[in-house]
Length: 236
Ligand code: TMP
Image 1: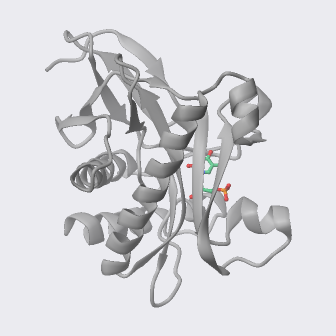
Image 2 (image 1 turned 90 degrees about the horizontal axis):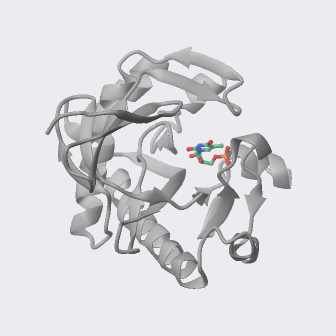
């Protein structure tokens, strides 16, 4: 499978057409941004970690019954995925308070919730990805009621699967962001990536941060954290 015309370049990935109209190739970059692209940098090796880790997790989720866009890993940075049209919602699940939740509601980080929370942001850079509820999403015709129900139940299933999996690696899955897409037949699949860019991972013993918060908050040891997560997931 070979790359054809580039369709899109995002902050962390490029997407290419292939000779199969139903398949795309994504190519992961080392570029990192935070706070709506205001903070920019490079995390050396990030593209490799995110590509390989995300593919591993997508395969795990497929086995658990979650349909995904994953097709085949081509090399360290490139993967064949099914063509989707992205539902313009960022779906965020939280198990422990952190980040914008702690800030918005004036609570400390690290409170373990009795039950996971879900929230949606409208994926729109000009509007800075505002929080939105399911009714707003329907009013804006971002998704149908049925699609929102499917997305919610898949997102909680992803959480159940990944929370238990990461705990077995000595990692707390604090929160994460998912994106979903529509295949040509209209069915909903998990898309985008699952990586230290899109999840908060805390070491289960020490609570050390093993994710992009090290970059966002200038904590140092960014590359080491990504490498450590790759080692725990892929054993290398
Ligand atoms: P938040 O606490 O800043 O709202 O982030 C919640 C989770 O979503 C966290 O694991 C990081 C992830 N995330 C993204 O993947 N992309 C984003 O643009 C933002 C703001 C958060």
